[in-house]
Image 1 (spheres, one colour):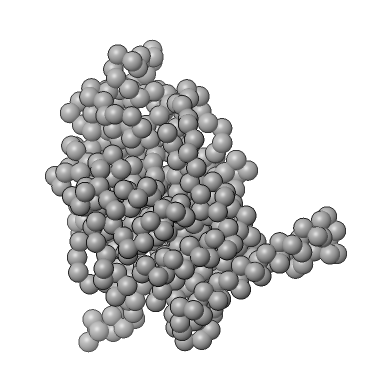
Image 2: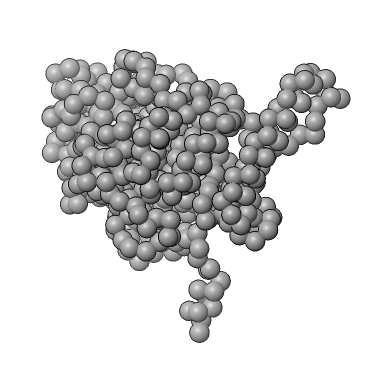
Length: 455
């Protein structure tokens, strides 16, 4: 059974699917990505397909960027002309899917207002940022890169494959209409509070969001009434266009929220306006798990293993993941990179298991469930015939602290190899690995910090 987000308000609907042996022509990769012309057969690995049970001594067969087959050695014939790669003793699983990342030098909305849906985060991203190499070294292959949470609505997110690229367009994941895929980033709680024009209270924050949604609905109604008559159409507003896409279910709202009362406020607005939402962080979700389950709202969870941070996260507990799992909530983990370094992301699933989460759900939370939250589960997140050949080779069990990511592959192309000295630099963090990278902190004054260093 596969769960996928639908366009009904907050609904996660069950549907049955079966593996296919042909490419799924629903999505399109960047036209600049080189094709993987030679069939590759990875043999002898401990396969973790995510869908189905693990397979010892399994074979993964890939060609032209897609998975042809994944299964036991005797069930996957290797075609003539294929190159065989022996990965005996290794673990092979799907590439990791991060639903919440801030790498690439993000620069989104500014201080001019609390709601800026016209901002497109990909206009600020630098594909040469070393953060992308850090991501590949951690086994992440798909990201939802988002603006920060200092605004009620800080802009449009972008879904990317971390292919080796010369420009950000080469990383885009395109839909069937060749449009880049992405969501909308929203936030509540203390992050977007401030001096006017920003709200000073939670009540005012919700009022501003509600008014923005009403404005977007009125804009949509005017467009519909105008039809094909250009004289009747309102002046184009690219921000309202994005909000309309969210209200129509074509963009998922990715919503930063921590406290239990803030989570309920998001669900209240979701029920009122009918947008699809993924709740992010949800430090106090364990207090309102039944309400989240009733709303069928997926949760993108972060678990941190160090003290400090914001007061809203003071009651974050590792038990959140197993509590949500038992309540029937769809769960994914995210890095919020730099909050959790992409190279250390496996430990988040391990924390969940330690607190009582099932191993199956924990591994799904790194892969297939994240794909579901990005409307990409027909393409990525599991090792199934017809899906993209995004996978990683590990030295051991994914939940072991001793395990290393040895190779990362995207669409049949190797993008990270730990045995390569240049790649290993980014995996280990040696001198020069982060020369162009600065930590992302929501409350960090860079200029003041630099002045302090100078004195």
